Length: 479
Image (cartoon, rainbow, N blue to C red):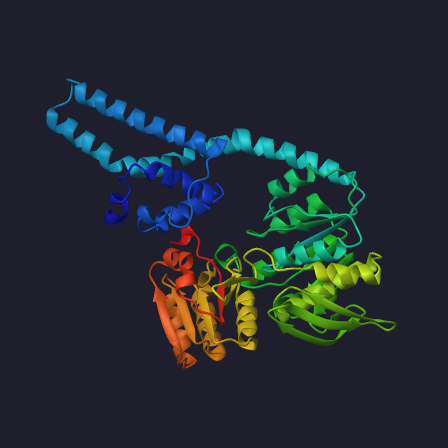
């Protein structure tokens, strides 16, 4: 603890505190958790740095004013003739020692006040405007909820439906009420279809977003331990995600039938299951996967379609089938569906293949869930390569299930048996190693103390004809 606060006596500490607030998305609960958890402030801005915005500039100014007031207070104490010298020295020493603590906790007071009197009223206006604007928009609204795979499903639907309709969706991870509302307020009103991701961090989140979006069609991609540290138990996660189904109340709902938790819950709703075997009236006749993508044939009672997607991994076949079924229901022609599926491609940091020195490096670092880990490892197992290399730091926000989840990951890695396993050293590394030992993994294990250096110099590690799968990321907030 003492060593931690000693690391705060640096000029960069002010920027570090503001960075921690920004990286926590100004959620004070998450910020305080990080503040208590962090072992050294030197390691906080390791992977990323502070993005200067109007808000961060204002917070920096407030912090420097706090320091100036502290210096002024020290000067007043020092010049006062009313206190004995020993008292002055004690007060000045206490002020100096406590300054980092006062700064890191004190900055939350103006932030909290600003949130109540400025941010919240402003958000209400923006959200209210978005509700009104979307009510006047005649486009079909599709909402996606789930512990994982939301962005992938969004991009697949954008590509497939976009081949025959005017389709839009928020960029990046605009899946919060403010992000969604800001996007809605940019719409022209001429769209045919609008696709939304509904983010879930706490119970009630999906319900609130659904009430803003008012979807006509819902897709639930699955339920797992992602964000379990916030939800506390998987039942809360499951109930929150299915708030979308509660809102739809009989409207078209598609659920990932290959995810057991989602499949179990779907029995209580009028829903259509999708999987790698089919969706709705479409069934898969044949399929094959490689580094060039997925080739598959689907058919219904009257016709069959020969399709190719540039996406990697058979685990995405179910999502493609769901998009095909929705496209068919919305009136897209066969040639448009074929073209739309052909337009699907790997997304940034999500099963994205890159050629580095003749090696194929699959960047799946934005994957942050157990199901995605298993899917990636199954893909790695199916591929041919001179050497197969698996790289991961593990998963964050697994709560009380962290040991169990990472033990299973280690066992799965051992089952796939890559030639080399590279683990980024952190609090869950031992759990993965434990799983590797259980699976009697006999390959080469390497534990990296400096992940940033490893990723930046990956070209020095790989060689021609290697296949490398890099999964998951470890944000600065968990260092």
